[in-house]
Length: 151
Figure (cartoon, rainbow, N blue to C red):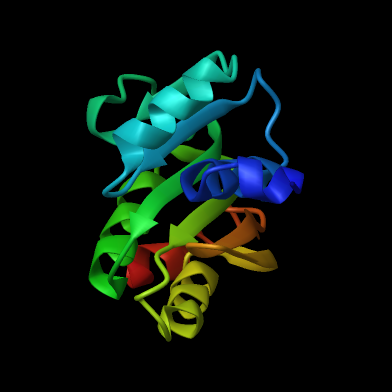
């Protein structure tokens, strides 16, 4: 039996998000999206020290180095989550977004939105039950005017 078959589809998505966002256990991570609580718990089980849910974040804006969006089932949901966490991320943050498999065709729209917010798409990976897209923020301070217009 292959190791791939031993990992649940949800665990595969979490592992892919961790890999594509290049997470370390000490990164400050803000999590949003429909499956944010499940992702938060998965990160805590793996020993990540500073994950927080965007809905309960009390840390000052611009202090998180990674944003994760879990459970993207529609463009509107993903867009709301991205815009919601964009201000919480620092000037050179990374972001990873899981897109559910039945939400086909969202990739291009999500890429366009990320680029409007100053992110450069770096990678994408197909999982058994979805797709994970990763991007890195170009210097936020230089792009603030265009970000304010996009939001």
